[in-house]
Length: 153
Image (cartoon, rainbow, N blue to C red; front, side, top):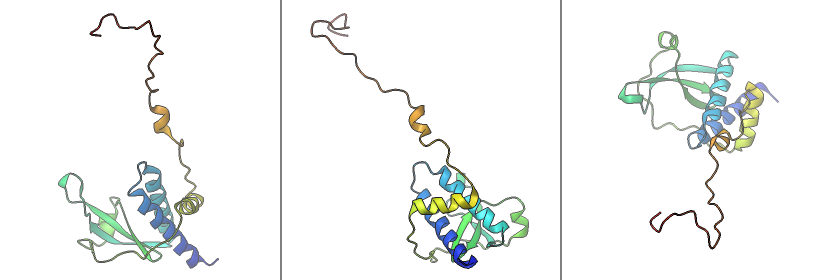
């Protein structure tokens, strides 16, 4: 498989993971996969930082910028580092008319591809379930015995 073919497949996997992360209940692992994959692609000169954009939804009503990254045929945004403000040109507002090309990749395949690329493994499968207290189950009631002391209890 050629390098450009592989780059486009990785870009499509990043796009798929990013799209699912926006609606997932536990999205930290998906965003970590996206971030690590993009950093790795940038370090290997297989993706490039194009410039800075103003964020569409800034935190706490403060103006915020994000980096526009081109990987394959896809464009992504990531959080900037301090040096990015000195080295990258500011492109202004986000262009709402542009959309990434449509993608049809299975999330499981995309996560596997990025996991192999980055080496990131998910943490405990369901930490939220193990952290929850046990459910309340009422005691079995005998027909003639009740723990109530009076009618109002």
